[in-house]
Image 1 (tube, helix red, strand yellow):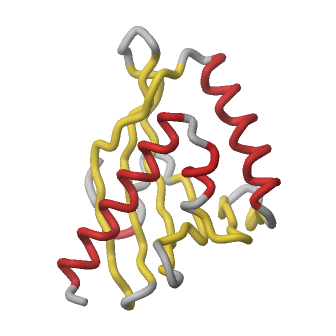
Image 2 (cartoon, rainbow, N blue to C red; image 1 turned 180 degrees about the vertical axis):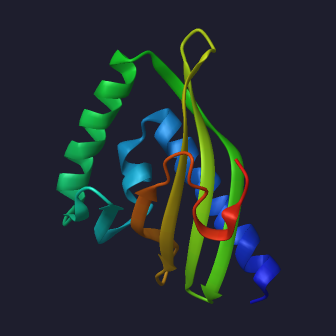
Length: 141
């Protein structure tokens, strides 16, 4: 598979990930993750989500918190990927979260490590990239 084909597959994967998030489709959203997977932060280090059940409980809590803050949907503003093998890649994405009135709730940048298993791409790790830092590739915000 060429780098261009991998990049297209990765972008399609990420768009379907955001679409499942926006629909609050817990099953489709959960399919986007490898279990276990991990969050990596400077403050807490490595936090692991061991099972799909744990992931679904966390997803329900996160969605409740977002809705309480007025969240209506999220949109992808920037997508960049770096294939590292036919079955391994890194993704950088800028996402805007919108309120029900259409105003901006927040802008986030995240970095993902993904791997392809026999059927599809799956998230293995994720990290938020906080301003003013740009993250991998020094991609401008």
